[in-house]
Structures are given as C-alpha cells and as structure tokens.
Image 1 (cartoon, one colour):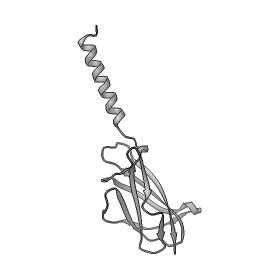
Image 2: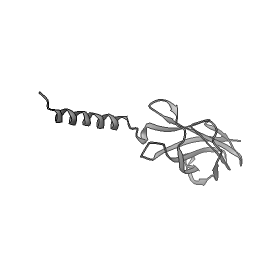
Image 3: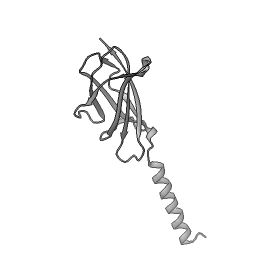
Image 4: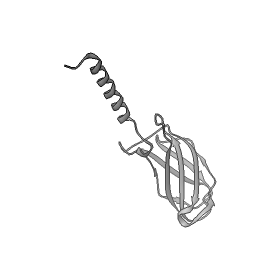
Length: 131
C-alpha cells in the first residue's frame, strides 16, 4: 500500500514534469519571410513572420531587440542595410523599412523575446532584392 506522503510526492513530481514538458524552447520558433523577394530601393519593405513550429501559428507580441540586414549570402557580409521597424500590422508579422542599395541576396538576422519564453529566439531569413 502506498502511503499518503508517497502519493503526494508522486503527484508533485508528475505536475513538475508536465509543466516542464509543456514549456517551449527557443528552437520551437522560426522566422519566415512574408515575401522572399523585395525591391532594390531606399524604402524597401522587409517582413518576417514569427511562427511557433509546434502549432504552425504566428506568434504576436514578440519583442525584437536585435536585427542586422547584410549581404552575407552573396559573400559581402560587410554590406549592411540601414533599416527601421514599421508599426505593427498583422499579428505575428514584423515589418521593417530598409535601404536596400544593391540587388542580390540579403540576410536578415533577428533576436527576439517571446512572451512566456525564457530563451532568446534567433533567426536568419534570406531575401532576394531585384531592380
């Protein structure tokens, strides 16, 4: 027969395991391009969608705190594009206005904090700029 203390300990352990298993990790999220093609101009719009890979749904309310837009996919990582965040629109979509100075492939690197997620979510999205 299992004693009362053993049952309480078993239930507490099960609850702790269930809570831990339900938590997401930073690798459960992914940045995806809204459109992989952007215009080569001083006011190009770059949009990324943050997706929870477990559900396939967009994640609203993330705080994106570090970004870099460069031409590293074409071997020119030192070629940076000045960019600024645009006002929010569709939930889970994060948009930026960028000064894209050259046609080619651009990498947009992002770091974000997702509500309820203790780890930093990082991503890298490649866009192709055309004239």
